[in-house]
Image 1 (cartoon, rainbow, N blue to C red):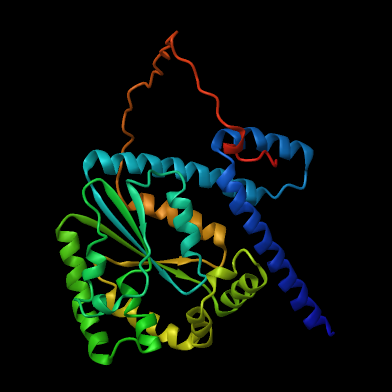
Image 2: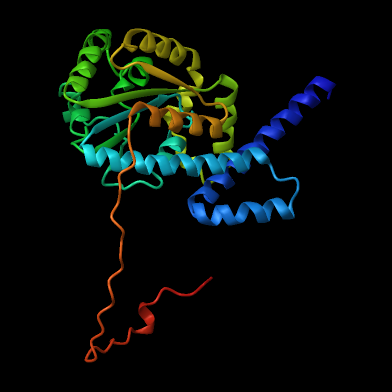
Length: 308
């Protein structure tokens, strides 16, 4: 192995290790709340002088931004706003990761995710936008589209699921459709997650090797990998023809997952001016004790075994 090959191998191993750490971080994010993190970081820093400062910053900023998202959620409910956020990008670009961080601490009755499957035979006979309209928000709701009506400009075009006439009709219609949504009072925000050819290859390889993530790979994903260049051309056409003043595209550089998450959430917070809603002090009522109440015994076989 020559020096260049050795260097490439080391870089590849470094990136794999970083990917593994990121998987661990995802679990940590889901389990550790803000208060525990505040107590954990001083301990970690004291015990381990080699702690990665950037990871510490990532967690601190993520939790801070999620706190702001809660304030935004309260404002949306208070003002009966209607917010739609579209997340588009190549397979494995990190859309699901940022959606998970946005919704992680929000009320699912206020902020929900629309991730539509392939259209049914009946839906294929409808107006193209019809099945998306039913998922649009009412007042006081936020809807995050994990892929959206832009499927027609991407996967449907590249995979031949629509003909040229349907493709052109989409581009004629979508600007007017989005302007109509905005005139109806919907706040529409569109994100494209951008990764490199090399990064997608790495992430696909990690999914292949990780039993917990293999479910994320579909035959369509494999085909999208083979047709990278066709997807690039379709993306360029889509951005060129649907980047309108009323609903512009925002490109999220997503090779670095953590930066992409923080940058996207930070930008999202700037798109909906909000204020903190004053909450009434919550007082826990006294527990009512009834001297005649007797708790019935629970049969042992009904308990989940204490394995841990």
